Image (cartoon, rainbow, N blue to C red):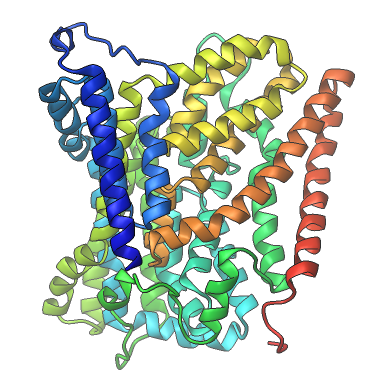
Length: 555
């Protein structure tokens, strides 16, 4: 009954909105002009499509139709009521059409990487190596706390790329957390909170390269050195990592996550009826002669080959330095190269050890594709929505607001940049796009104030990661759900209170840092970081006092 009601509400909202659009805009002949620009370009309504998608996904707990409707609304707003243009824009626009997004080399690379990684997971399960690793881990990881901390530690160690982090950590640690009754939603949260937050403070990562690219030409500082300078000021990343540790060690949860964890302790890892991964997952099985090295060696090869692939695309083997090759790397291309190499090596490695037959290996290819169909559909639809938002000038809308207010809010600029960055990343679902827009603005506001510039850029990066965490249309959020094999909306709803708590603490930190630097003009602003970490501990201590431990028994 509830599902029927939600579907009716969704249908009514969609029909009413489309009728209103048709009445207001009618047919717009000018929309076919070559130099066409929509009337709503860079207006507040440019953010309407992602907001509609986010609201609908949270109301209906169904993300496919929400993303499609958001994209459709964006295409209609862009076309000014010209239905032919709207249809062509939705499907074939060079800046974000559904078909073009799939054929985009970077996006296609991500999809291929996802399929290959899913195939590797299936292969590891069929070979018995996942079971062998589980037996080894059961001798060293005896508690739910240990399982959660081990997952976090593995996420910290895989700092090269967030998508790579999500899938690798999820596939390796999921059997361990399942065995210790950690809910899939909690696993997705831990993965998400040690993917982007680690990458954004790791000097050798695809994110460091993206940040370096975002710094405009003509600045008086080295972009990579500035990235290093932002690391101790990236309060959301540091606070989030601390939060994962404290939540695990103090053994409590709050919000909807608490229900998921309580149900997991009773044997239900999913909580909701919508559990698309439960039947599609290839269960680890016992294989005679399976060894833990059968899992560790392919994973190590995967990490090393993906790093090698990234620096190859950045020109390392043509004489570029290691750092510069990372800065110039094409991460999507490098990850595909590394994962294909790993798949080939794993094929010969497993056959030589006799843990798999040729037929089992080949059967794993379509099985891997089937396992990750759902997140791939969500990724494609989210790229489509992002493209429609871009066509409407959402980036320019935010940029205009920042340019008009930044000079008069210099003392509070880190706080303002953080808040705007959170909102933009949440609305558009892209952290990279967010800091690419905001970093040049910040550099123009503080061309000579190095310390304030470092704090403000850090605030931009932190806000981008935070908004990315909160948004159901973010690719990192989607990949975290896929890596944990958790229902996507469950992940979004359970993570949101945690992300907002970390965001509030970080906002206080940036407020303090901005005031200190503005008043003293020195590096005393570093005090704001330990203040934020202590405040995070205090907030979680108060919450734990209120909600109590999740587990009564001492395990």
